[in-house]
Image (tube, rainbow, N blue to C red; front, top):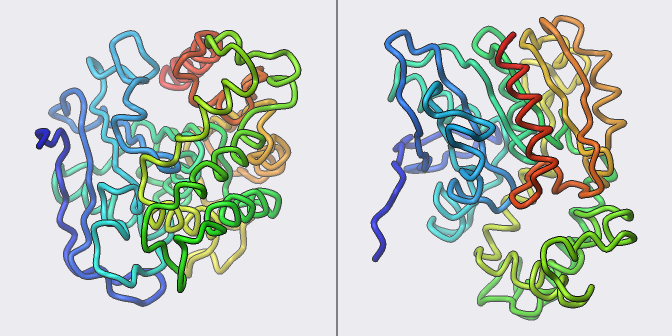
Length: 337
């Protein structure tokens, strides 16, 4: 068995936003770099859909977007990703969780384990970006800066529909019975990947055959090797749990803001960098444009779309040097302020 490269924060019995008690809730996390004596060099980097910390740590490095020689970087694994509490490692039935639940436990981790009361930056892509937005609204005096990369303050109706198509593809597999998967949905994973491929990348990405830049020989080769098995590495019930968190995502969906998104956005005091993908199909630039004008109490708020044909994946450019360079420059500029 491989040695575990992360830690577990035992949160105990946690009362969720729904009122349900989750017994022995666990938050998996990994840290990079050294916490300064003043505890003022902290970057929180929440994970995205289906990702575990090692999937996103490529962006951490002395020459990367987030520099561990200067900052103490904490990656909390989102519930439902198979490392933190998830259907695959918890007793059934698995309750509904929200971003608010995730941020509450992440806050406890930072305070109880490290004594952290200030965040230099919350950085997140996709579901991680939605968590960054929640952090900025829920803890306005703690968050100095937030970078929302291909994310939004709430799950837009169009985004919700996209996720419905993903769920429909996955749950059409006969392995889904009585509301849960009883075995691995081999056909469902492939169907989900094919649906995702159409939404995650842009029209221009396929028109210009940009998949050739990554060494794929044909469109079918790209779909088969890049997408067919993408989600098969995760437990299918875990995927459904995270889709639920995503669809329920809304920074105002709590007692503090009473479902009023304008009030929630106005609570934010951080320097905000909204960095959507210019061709992202489900975290649409227009949602960030609407949000920008309502960040009336933020120290500053800017909208800098990533000029890329890589759609949603422009925000996670593992093998895309151009988009990497754009994001790196934007974050460097944000941290200098």
